[in-house]
Length: 366
Ligand code: TRP
Image (cartoon, rainbow, N blue to C red; front, side):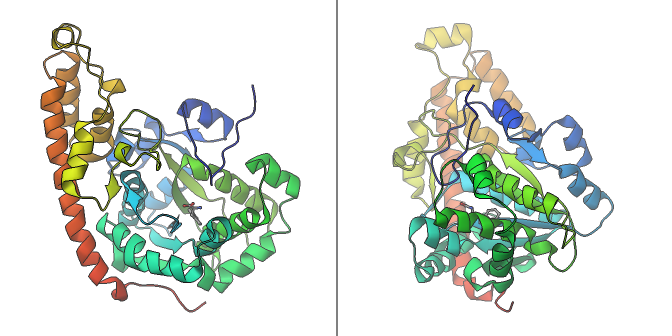
């Protein structure tokens, strides 16, 4: 079998998360690790978070109330977010509530080196859009340190320092073919991930989608072989992608009707949901007789990942669908209503976060 390589800058289609776990050295997120984490959030309880690396270290820090940090990055390449981006924010929020110190960086150097977006444009997008959107999705701005890669001298210097720790062949083995801009972005991202440890070593967790796993691997390789700072191996959580409403594994930017962007017009979001692929049978008679297939239903997946918080309520929908009692029409009407409400709510919070953007805690002295 051909060894799988993930290109973090390309389209990643993951058909099989279990296979990914085996091939990328990720541990399954299972009941055992779940039990060690207090008040797990919706994504963790439902195993939408499917994998992790060294999360036990973070669980111990939570239990012992010792110091740990959370870090994530936003690349301001697109003008809009999509529903899937919300999961990163919820994971940051979870660890933040458990006592971690949160860092959110704007990957403006990565956007410059890999997408040809100027630093000024990246800043404009981040301040007008990405950062307020993250706040609207639940990030606590008072407890979060923000920074721009281009303005963080410590990160930039560390990236240069790490450049001697990986060979070109190792880059190729992890990423396949890459150019100089991508190599610089990788080194900068490794520096980002280790930045919260620069004053003193401490556990750091990076919540990401599977597309970012090559960066974790490169970063962990650097830590294992470079002892100067005594860095602790960074931990990660991996969540699944939010599927396209048309049934594909990942949302596709080229088919705007197949995913929910945020912000979005609530009416349009509702319509998109009404057109989603479900696990319904060919005829109503057949559905009543055989029951529906929630495992194949995009609406059920969206409930599970985003729209229904209460586990019992979700179980009840599953049961009624399976037994043929709940038909797709009724269910879509509910999903449409919940989605509209979610979007209306988001839009309001976004407006407010945007008008408060100048009060954010953006680190500018390095
Ligand atoms: N590469 C990430 C992206 O494409 C952005 C990023 C930069 C990042 N540095 C990071 C993510 C550190 C997690 C941790 O979105």
